Each structure stands twice: as structure tokens, then as C-alpha cells.
Image (cartoon, rainbow, N blue to C red; front, side, top):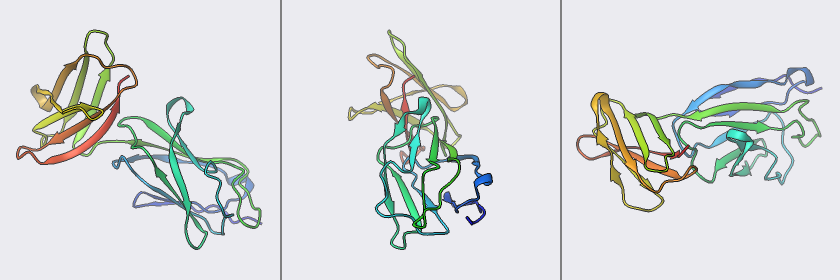
Length: 202
């Protein structure tokens, strides 16, 4: 008999135990602030080794897989899922443990288990950049401690956004395309970096 599910989210770590067939569920939505957040999934029984790299995965909008690496703990009771590329600001992701995932005893989940999460800022509240053939307008809303924001595409130099009222910053950029990933940085009044986020042009 499989053990009843016990769920605990603590310090951004997900603990998952083998569940009875009728108890499969979707975990509550979880906001995160680390673009390279690692998920640790703990099981009440050992899992098979080696772990299929596609056994547990992360999807983003339109069910596109977010590239991640999977490794197993030394005692075979934990799976660690690490993103290879940073999560994008404001994008909703889903961590998926499929029903076929099994313990060494062959115990499986009846249904897949999922948890949705989204990257949110600590000092940056919102980012928008909607593609425009003439110039894409980038808008960043910061908290009161943000004195300057910049934007960069790939490894190009940072461009400073123009500060507006209510701690809003904006800049029009030529040559951007939908799907381009921008690096947004927020600085305090002393020029210290407060936060770095990645945002995809819509």
C-alpha cells in the first residue's frame, strides 16, 4: 500500500511523498524571487537510479519545456531539479512529476503531480516590453529604493532607462524582436546593484 501524501513547502523546497491512487493533487501556486531557483523533491522511499533526465521536468507558457538538469541525492530519496537557463520575469512555469515516476519498489503515482510557480521581483515590481516595429517601449516599475534601471540585450552594453514619476523607468529601443531576452538591472542611489532579472519581449 502506498503511503498517503504529505506535502510541505518550506524555504522554497518542495517535499513530495508517495501517494495513494486517489490522492493525486496539484500544489498551490508559489511565487519565487531567484531566477536560478533549484527545486528539491523528497520522497518517502528510494527512487530508481539512474533517473531519466526527462522524468521530472519544468514547462513554461504554451507547454514549452524549460531546460533543466536532474540529479539524485546520495541516499536516493531526493531529486534535485536545477534550471540551466534563468527563469524569465513574469512567466508562469509548471513543475511536473508524471504519473509514471516510480520508486525502487515499483510504486507509481496514479496521476501526474504539478506545481505552478512564477518569478517575481524583490525591488522590481513589473516589467513590460511589447514588440513594436518602430521602437519597443521598455517600462520598468521599481520600488522606492530603486534609483536607476538599465537594459541590455545579449552581451551588449547597458542602456539607462529614463526615470518617470512614481518610480517608473522607460526607454524605447530599436531593433528588438519578439522573443528577445532582455537583462534588466536595478540600482540604488549609491550605484549598488539591487536586482537583475531577465524578461522576454512579447
